[in-house]
Amino acid sequence: MSVIVLAEHSQGTFKKKTFESVQYAADIAKAMGTTATAVALGTIADSELQLLGAYGATKVLHVADAKLDTLNARAYAKALATAAEKEGAKVIIALHDVTGKAVAPRLSARLKAGMVAGAVSLPDLGKGFAIKKAVFSGKAFAFVNITSDVKVVTLMPNTFPVKQGEGSTTIEQLSVTFEDKDFGVTVKEVSKVTGAVPLSEAELVVSGGRGMKGPENWGPLEDLAGSLGAALACSRPVADAHWRPHHEHVGQTGGTIRPNLYIAVGISGAIQHLAGVNASKTIVVINKDPEAPFFKAADYGVIGDAAEILPKLTEAVKKFKAAHN
Image (cartoon, rainbow, N blue to C red; front, side):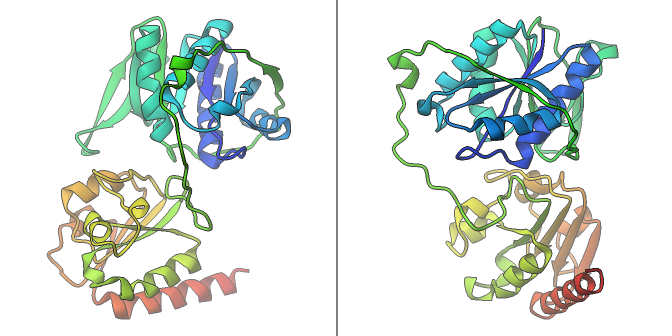
């Protein structure tokens, strides 16, 4: 009766968020006195699958079907349901990202399972199976107790630090009988951002808003992000004006992130933007308007012109790194 977890990969490679979800599943399994089984879908090498053992997966079920290389919610849910039946799993874990949001609700309905979306804690087994999650756009928390026999949980990425261990895993091939209707939706093309730190993975994020005045002024933001090794983000008006690509948009209608450090430059801090970033562990706001609402949510605030502050901040980061290397 293992805990199973969907081990997402990107073109055959696991990212930090996958290791976090496997570790989360392993922690739940340990508390329940059982083991964690990872389910990998699509084309991925055994050498990559072996990495999951270091994060707590004692077994990996691999559905090696190339048609699963791109997300198909119906087929993914069927594969996970098959894995759950094989393992007698009562708890199924996925990430609260694009894949998890598409697959977990379908799987929950298929298995008649209760579900918590966007968990930010391990379940409290002393109170049944109670899990903490953010509600009201992150302005409050709720504790949801899943009482069904089978339970589905999606974990908010970047909730727990990832710790690599020395465990190993066994790999088994899992055969799933698919039908044509399972692939009724065909993916024609997948475009991925390359050469940058993915926002969903980033522990450090530098973000700009309308206060930057135009795309020609983004250089200092890029310099700061480069010196920190941070990802770049932006507010919705910036993306709508095509100053920056839409995949950088964070907020209620964009991406939701949980970095260790979020630096917001020239962003007023409307509630729609805060909904996507207020789970950041530390928020630094740089704005020349002392009445900007974002300052109320900030851990640190700097009142001033970004054109003057950013180069000085970048230089300070470079000096600090040079002194500690």
